[in-house]
Image (cartoon, rainbow, N blue to C red):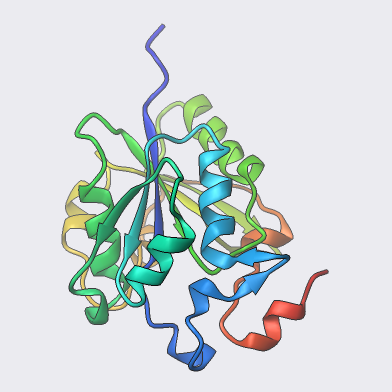
Length: 198
């Protein structure tokens, strides 16, 4: 039997979060700790290794919040050109033998290790291997997503602008959908969402 494919994780935490207001969104507290720390803790408690965090805006402050954790921190100098630049920077920082990557958004503080491990388990069970595994909640695809780095290599290399993998996956018939949880559709774009604890 072939060994399980190696799955890493990439946390996207480079954006300005301009809709959030003057406070750095990734540093805003949710349930007692900075949002980006929730993402990092969830990834480190999962089966994914290594865990890469892509920094851009407020990089110094975010580094301080993540100090002491077993993370690979990568700065994206082009973060202002859109999400695609951070995704490509994060994927490039993974070891060459990484077969798939979990992509987490730093502003989804309810994500837990179990959500990530569900995606990994579904990927490892699938035959044939899917190009991606995505959670679906309320009839909508959510995040995080797991991307097969071989099947999607050309499409990911060509990403531009403020887009993630969504447009790529929307046109494919080899995407595996699994049941998601409320956490997979909850993100924080405005301060009012921080108090939405239910």
